[in-house]
Every structure is written in C-alpha cells, then in structure tokens.
Image (cartoon, rainbow, N blue to C red; front, side, top):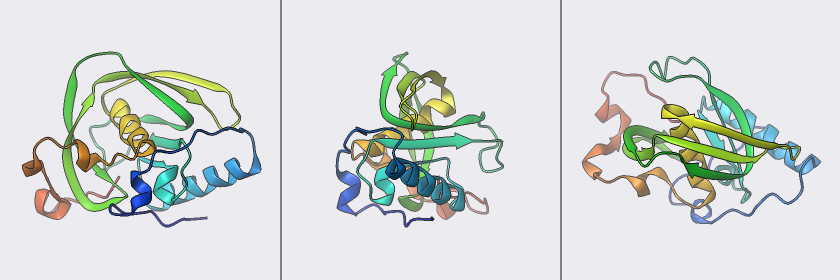
Length: 176
C-alpha cells in the first residue's frame, strides 16, 4: 500500500526511532511492503520508516541506472534494520540532495566519502557492506532520518539550498 510521506515540519520526523526487536514478523513484512510501494510510486532512491510515520529503525535504498542520476553508480536494493554506520575515511564530499519529505527542494550536503554499514535484513540475517561515493551518500541520508535529522539540517551554506526549479531551470529533477 502506498503511504503518505510526512513532510518537513511534522514533529514525527524529528524523533529518534526505536530499534527493531523482532525480525521475520508479519508486521515488519507489511511495513517493508508499504515502504517499497511508496518508494516505487514516488521514484525515490530511498525511504526510511519515519517518513511514513513509523518510528522504527528501518531504511531501504537502491538505485538502478536512472536518468535522474546519470552520473551515479548503481546502488543495490537493500532493506536494512537497525543500521550502524562507521566512517572509513575522514574526507567529506559536498553533493546535491533532495528528499521526499522536503519536496521540490535541493541542497548541498557534506557526507563521508567512504563508510561501512551494518545491520540486519528483515529476517534478522546480518548485513555488512562497504560503500563509497553516491552509495555512501544515499545510506547516510536515509539513516539520518532514524535520528530525526533532515538533510537541510546538515547544509553549511544556505545559498546552496532552494527550490529545484529555480536551481536547475529546465531540468527534470524529481525529489529523492
């Protein structure tokens, strides 16, 4: 079922999410199904459970070759419960981000260039991967939602934040 995505200003987006305590449950499967439907319907690169009003530490992300991200590498579709991020480099890279919870806007956000993420799949099987560049950016963006952080909170220069149609006139750029 496609769910409504909460928008910036909704206080639920600022709350810290609770860990998933039970894996392989029908409730967790239903949440993930709804998240997949919602993300697909909105052509998003990722989605966190808090964005649909569920305060659990569950994110999903994945990007196939996509005209919206012509320079981005593919990111394997992943559902990650109780993620833990570990930076593997001290370098940050600035990059444009958007968000389904901040529709119609874009901003430049610094993110770690390399990291390791770990957590569990919906059945409780451990997942550990290393990511860099766009993949690392997407993971960090989605996991921020679990701690009540929206990307505009990370912008260092508000001159690099605005409405997509003003920043990129004539380009067809959808929200992430």
